[in-house]
Image: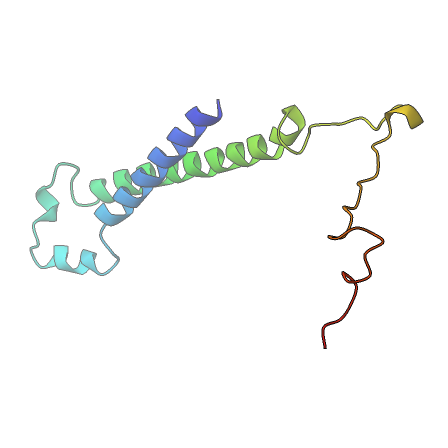
Length: 120
């Protein structure tokens, strides 16, 4: 489920990027008044702007909803099972206690006085 939403999220992001790059800026309308030729386009003079802006709005809404969906799924992921949700029980009693670590003896044995001497 998460993979499907992630793929849809990436596709929506790429579509929004492409649609924004296809649209003309506000200053481009002035060029149409002086014979730029956009009046003879497939959608008419203002039809392409309406189509592109509506499609961009729909894709932005899809992007927003997939973002919310991915956030919801990632926030509830720890409750289903993950690294942080593993529960270990404490030892049952004194028999199950972990023994204390032993410290190794110093080299030369305990009774060797030369091992503790400081060189002069």
